Structure formats: C-alpha cells, structure tokens
Image (cartoon, rainbow, N blue to C red):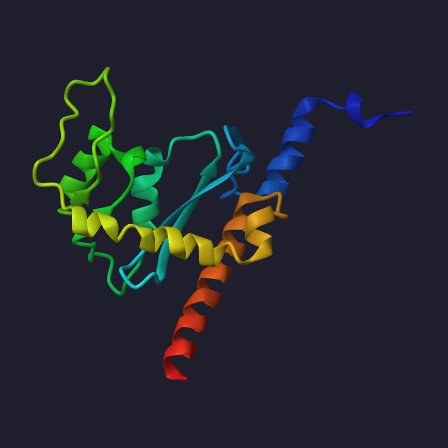
Length: 183
C-alpha cells in the first residue's frame, strides 16, 4: 500500500508546478494583511475612469512595490506613451517610486507620508491639490469593478485565473461606458 503522504516531495512539487503553469506566482497572489486574507489589486485608469492596466499581489505586500508592474501593464497603441501625471495616495510616497516616475518623465502627484523617522520627506510646496482631488476616479473605478461578485469574493485559486476575471470585468466596464454614451 502506497499513500500520498509517503511519496517523495520532488514528485509533488513537479506535479504542482505542472498544474500552476509558468506565469503563476508561488503564493498565488494571496496573503494575509490587516484586513484579512486576500489579494491587492493595483489598477491604472485614465481621467475618464477607463481601466487601462492591472497587476495583482499578495495582500500583505506594500502597493509601492508594484507601481512599475502596474504601469507596464498598460499598452496604448505603441509601447512608448506614458501618462503626464500619476495621482496616488500616501502609500506610494517612497523615494524609489518618485525616482522611477521622474526617470519616465511622469509628474508624481503623491502627498508625502507623515513619517517622523524619515527627515527627507518634506511637504512639497508645489503639490497639485486640484489634480490630487481627482484621485477619487480610481476609487470609483475599483468600486465599479467590484460590482462583479467573482472579483469581490475571489473564487479562483490560481492568480492567472483571477487576473483573467479582473480583465474580463475591465472589458465589461469599457463596454458599459461605450453603450451608455451611444444611447
């Protein structure tokens, strides 16, 4: 008699690697954060709340680690065009993010964090408040995407399948916007 738990571990890892596929992250983009077990959705949208690109990450990871991946997920025609400005919350206020945006000639509209340990974080006197106030567009866009029950509850185990469902909801959002304008 040969039981499953008596098999060598290398056959189990080979089997799981085969099932996961090459693009599937090891942790399935799941992680525990203060809000519980879940996935963070890093979304990029334009000023008209049209979703352009998405990247998912485990719930416990900081959003600022995935700015590059989320912005690189946006493909508008040719590979070169970038936005003029990027409005983000204080969670993205890190020197690494700001320098990456400067290198790509994107103006950062990000308020500085209130971090007493970091004396380099000073309030920017040129901070663009009217543009930052329009940041609610991304919050509304995420709210519209989360009207899809499948995204709110995440039925999919694999991250690639969950990402596909998010992209399907983004397409649905775009179709709804197109059809509402033509009516």
